[in-house]
Length: 405
Image (cartoon, rainbow, N blue to C red):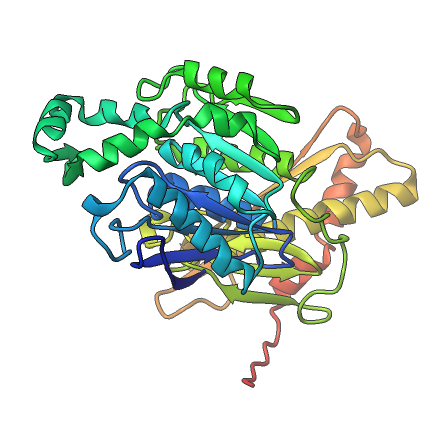
């Protein structure tokens, strides 16, 4: 993930990040966050990372006066948010490429609908919990609206933070009709909304959807809340967006089985986060991480999980190969778990070299046969499982040669 800055619509520097794919870039996406949120809100992070895993370089940034961006929030308005999006697209056009996909969450969804007309490369727009009119956001500070109108400005508290809202901000919101932007949108549109969203009602999604021309799609986000605070909801949204946008805005997936970054091997590269790692294995992009309890984010399997994957898959492949030669049906699953145990407590570990603390790595493999495999053949298949090359490598140990370049 790269951090960078771009001059925004009001002249202030905008703080931005791009989540890059481990492999080839299929398209660039530009993500607009919700009102007074920021690029690092959990939903934005989850969506950007998930899209990057699917080949989409996803750029998220803080609007003027928010997060890491410079400028005064009080001087901003909806038009400046739209301008920030356009300025960001202009900058991307000169670097990794102009965005073909715009994604907006809440008021950010309204902003991307309006901005799309000013970014000619846009081929697809996805809105998440977006209001049908920008003015809808005034409901979040309705108690202070009269004071803002009378005095020209007033402090408001939103999500535990204080902001100054000016009359010009409210007037600007009222000038924009998001449904008009949807009606004239020259790109595919996906409207995503949760039916029980108590912040921006589902009727907003209906109005946007009805106003837009085809191609358009609607996706229900089930029982998700407005902020997609459950990471599973954000990942679901990202997966659906990627699948849908592949028809309109993304380059085709690279051919599977192409050479890895290191011919005949695997490459690991740094991603954002304490441990997140991009992997390229024979042209297949993967991600590794550590669980939250040890400082990771749980965004992918651990290195030991991948060892377990290697053992489990090799075991099953070896049994299937043998079964094919014998004309046997191999109906089985293989479960592998890993743990560190004290050698003295592990009968199967006797004779194995232990660490200084007396513990040893122990992989437990459980083979479960289904009804398709004849009972008479099962014991032999278990014996064959021990001939799996990965099993033999782990059991015998291997030489590891390291060099730096």
